[in-house]
Length: 331
Image (tube, rainbow, N blue to C red; front, side, top):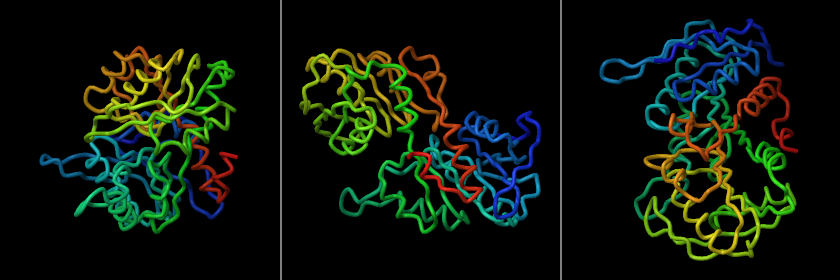
């Protein structure tokens, strides 16, 4: 159970350009990130209770007046995805019935995003279903981070801002590496656009791992497109789940002459034995964000580093509330 009490910060009333106080309400998915965003904005989390009945039914109670307020709901739909999704929907419904002026669903990690198209006969497009649920629950807009597929923005019938972790990663890469020896690598053909964008920002060459996926959760690396000999290779992707793709890609790059292999991934899903697999691998370091709350295994892993997106999301919330451009954050 999460009780969104004050963060201990001095209460500071911040108003948006269109009347109404800004309110932050958090679910149970990532309280550490929610508190960090609140600290950045110098706004205490709105007091709310999100708890379970004995049969695990979710109950929400907003314990402050939100009538006429510009409310931002902070909730990733990460593991357990269904529970956290239901929390998000019920919080939105509670706020709508409490007469909030505008409700923005801030979803640092948008679950079900990998189901963005039909992969076979009689299969669902679950990302569209989830978009419909969030819209119908009463959200007025959505703020998310590094969607798995950009077209998911079009699944929503409400304004949707997709933030990017790339500028933050670029700063970290520039501070950490000798760029003259860096090569950016896409772990598969589908991620080439993302990797090319980052490579352009740091003026680095690009390589591609060509792999064949035999079944869900498993991958077989076939070959490397590009000469990686002597380079420090940086794998770029949006999601790391089982870790199999990264581990196989690192092995293939090193076998083809790469000096070292690092990975920068936005969303550390890291299910099952992924952390142990990455810890035991030849990856020098995996850098993820806290869009998903890091587990204890992640926190103690020798070669996993976590970057915070609290400042990025906080700035986007401020701009949204003030009706200012969000895209200019990435210019």
